[in-house]
Length: 490
Image 1 (cartoon, rainbow, N blue to C red):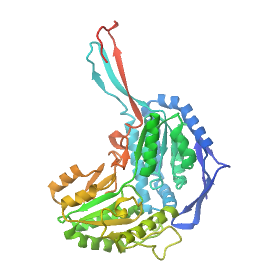
Image 2 (image 1 turned 60 degrees about the horizontal axis):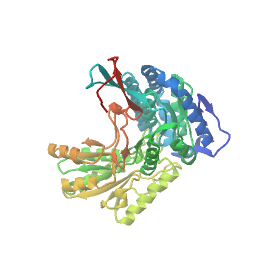
Image 3 (image 1 turned 45 degrees about the vertical axis):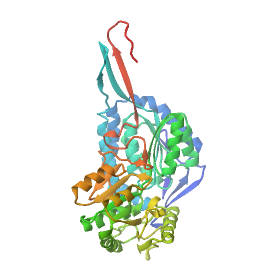
Image 4 (image 1 turned 90 degrees about the horizontal axis):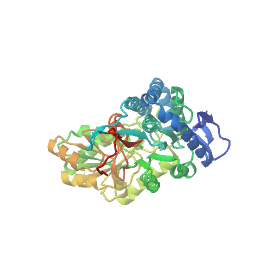
C-alpha cells in the first residue's frame, strides 16, 4: 500500500493531522491502493513560502538549463511508462492501453516543452527615435498555482508543470485528491531529474482549505486550472479581481455532425471511440451525435453493434475496452443523467444500467440515447461519463445550428466527403478545435489546446503558445545618444 504524501521544500511529508483519505481501485473496491491525510491551509502557506524563497534562484537559472531538467524528467517517465501506466489504471480506472497513451502524451509534452527553453526569446522592434534600440523579453510571472483534475492525472499536470518551470516560475501543484498517487509519482520523477528544493511543491488537499488559499494569497501571481466550468469561472473571477493571470480549461459538450455522404462505418467507429473511450471521462469526449435524418437509423445501428461487443471491466484486463467510472459520486451523477434522459422522453438504444458479471466497482454500461431534442438536459449539460445523445437533423444547416446550440465550445467533428461543407463547418463551428472525419478526442504536444465560450478562458495550453500564459512581456528601450531628448513620445 502506498502513502498519500505532500512534497514541500524538497521534502516528502507524512501528515499526522487533517482529514484522512483512502484511495481505492475503482475497478475493484476491495483493493486499497493508498492512505494518508489531506494538507491543510497551513501546509499550503508553507508551500507558497517555499516557492517564493526558491523563485529568485530558479528565475535566474538560464532557461536552457531549466529545460534540461524537464527533458530528463521526460526521459525518466518514458523509461518507466508501463509502471506509471499501471498505477494510473489502478487509481483512475481507464484501460491500460489508454493509460499508456496518456503517459506517452505526457512524455511528448515534456520533451517538446523542454525544447522551447531554447526559444524563450523576444523580438527587436524599430524605434521611431534615432539611436534608440527597442526589444522585448519574456519574464516569469513568479509563483504559480496549478490545479488539475483526476481524469488525466499525468498528462494534464505535465502540460502545466513543464511550461511553468521552463518559463522560470516556481510551482505549487494541487492535483485532485481522487488521484494523489499518480500525481506524486510525477513529482518524484521531477525530483529525480534534479529539480531544486522549493521549485516544485505538491499539495494534496481540499478546495475549501488549500484551493481557497491559493486563489487569495498575494504571493500567487497566476493560476492555471483544468476542471468544471463552474469552478473555472469562480477562479477566473477571483484572479481578475486580484489583477493576476488565470488560465482555465473547462467543460465540453462536444458534437459530431454526420452528413449523408459520409463514410458511415468510419463515422460510427469514430463516434463510439470518442464517446466511450476513457469511460467518457474527458473534456473532449463525444457527447452529441448530430446525424442527418436520412442516414440516422443506419448510423445508430452501426454504433449499437459496435458498443454491444465492448467488454466492460478492470482496465488491466487486456480484453476490456471500457473501465469503471472514477468514483461513487461520478457513477451516481451518470446514473442521474440516464434517468433524466428517460424522463425527458429520449429512448435508450443500448446500455442504461450497470453491467453484469463485473467486480465490485463503479461500473456503468456504455449508453446511447436516440430521439434526443437539443433542449433536453442530456443534450445541454456535461455528463462526463459514457452517455451519448443522438440528435437528428434534416440537413447540414440544421445540424450546424444544433452543434452550435451549446454554452460550451471545446472541440467538434464532422464526417462528410463534401469539401465545401468541410471548410464551411471549420469556419462556422463555435469550438476551439475541429476534427474532420476523425473523433473529437486527441491532441498533440506541438499544437495549441483549448476552447471557447464556457469551455475556456485565458491563453491556450501547449504548442507554440505554451509559454504565453506563464510569462509577461517586458519592453526595453535603450537610448544610446548620450543626450537628453527634446521630442516627446508616449
